[in-house]
Image 1 (cartoon, rainbow, N blue to C red):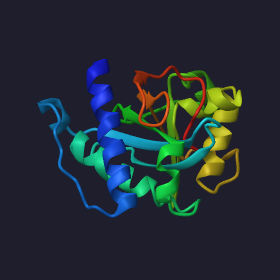
Image 2 (tube, rainbow, N blue to C red):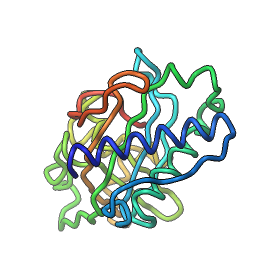
Image 3 (cartoon, helix red, strand yellow):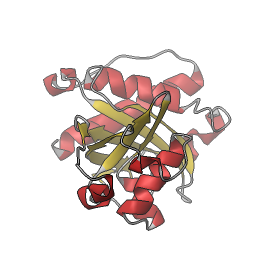
Amino acid sequence: MKDGEGEIAVRLARQAVDAEVKGTGENQVNAPESFREKRGVFVTLNQYPSHLLRGCIGFPEPLFSLASAILQAAQHACHDPRFEDLQEDELDKIVVEVTILTVPEEIVVKDRKELPQKVKVGRDGLIIEHGPFRGLLLPQVPVEWGWDSEEFLGQTCMKAGMSPDMWLDRRTKLYRFEGEIFAEQSPRGRVTRKEITHGACR
């Protein structure tokens, strides 16, 4: 995605967050034709300047157009069930981040112990599924926490509510995806492409 499109994505998310919290109901979308393509998206809200997580919601699979996915994820991020609902007096104290995902690809190996070699920290995000359990961590997360690929696998299992070694179970399905990240540098400030270093959704 071009940097200009990334900026539009973040501006759309910011617009949706502001409208959701203020209750204005504004949802007009002015975006390029490319935003009609179905894409997976996550919107992350971080406190500023601490960059502590304030909310993060998204769609791993390309179920909606990019524009629709951004708007919906931004609205839901204001009500992340792990936190209190975002309040109007916080709007100028957060930065908005949008991660645009590639289509998840299943990782298939003959020997489950080979899985850590198939996961590249700093590039891959992970989705893990086992029966009713499902967990996702974005590519930013292991870099932020300093995990290696095996720790990343274990933490994704735990995100799904499973024991950290469930990735070794052959019945467990594992998918990887990549993400392009664009974020405000300050509240309502300049938007730049973000290198994977910190400020992750978890």
